Length: 62
Image 1: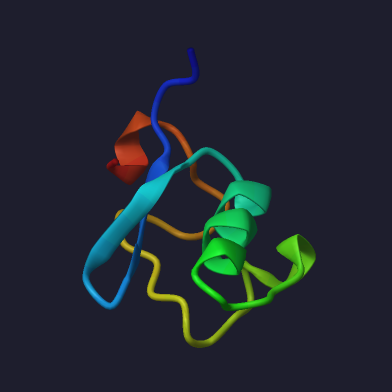
Image 2: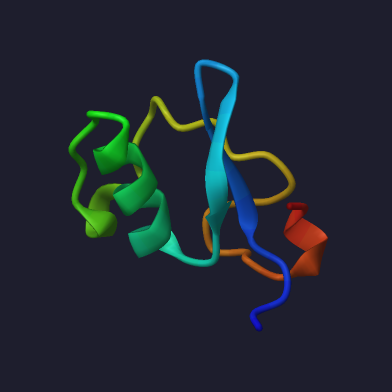
């Protein structure tokens, strides 16, 4: 089981725990927001908490 990860929220609702950019893109797709996983890190409307988009370990918070 992967350790760490980042909680993905849309409008305050937790959609799940992402372990990489592809997970973030999938959660957002399910919420009706289309984004290419390659564009997740640079999306200005994503608020990264606990570290930048390159950090997915336990220190990033989950």
